[in-house]
Length: 271
Length: 105
Image (cartoon, rainbow over all chains, first blue to last red; front, side, top):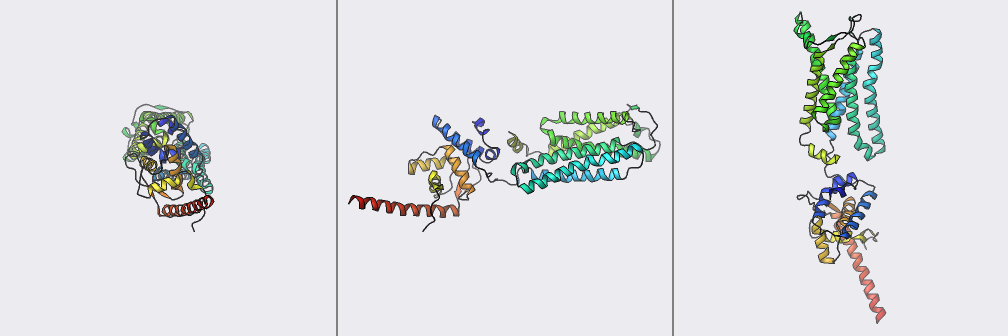
């Protein structure tokens, strides 16, 4: 019987599906019923206006709003970071490209939201949360690119190298200030990847923890390769990969906790 | 005089509203009630063409689901619409029956 419901429009199915199936369970089976149900199917597709929602707080509107606010915050952080960068040829190029990485996704979302309001289109509106997730993810990736790939000052002439000893910066720090600097770098790295893990979970969280964290680690490794390969004056550091993997896992965990109790609802919406 | 009917009552909506006039009912209860008082067999599909439309027009309200079944209640607007339709039907049937009798005598 569930197969029949799949033929109905999503709006109709979400609003009337359960009670309609319950009613069908009460019916004696018979050939005439199929014609009757087919008539209902046609009417459901013909009726232009969407059925009124029983529960306007459903559909994850608060979540979508939170994502937009986070995306905006990430954009501002990225802009501040770029704004405080010092001069050098590569850094200049980074300054030009980096803002686009964070500003373009936000502009897309704002334009999309405006278009949705203007048209009052229901299907557009229902796509908004997804667009916000994409934007959030692009913004976080933009921030990470800006924060990790802009060249390190003073290390310009240094050839690329690989640092396999984890946490060597903290362990070998000569002064308290250096140690603090190393810990701050690690904390910043972790925080960016908590955001990334959360964004990836929003994007493809249904796939489970392993694919999300694996994707996060993949991005972390790619960044380390680029850092060494592009001559940014930074090593390909094992510390960063470890910290980022942890960050991505924490981000996934945050998403997981935030969706408890919403899971079943989400399932209905995607089936 | 009630406003002239636009035909929306002709498809079983009237039967559903009459059924709900005695109190809230879920789909299966409406079917049994309608069959009992009118002999009409409303299929589940037909019923779920009618109920969403009555809901959109503000003539019935959905109530919180009782298990998987959801009861519906007639609204005040639905009640006055039903009364108007039934009054017009009474007027029409009075005129029609009188004319039949006059033709025979």
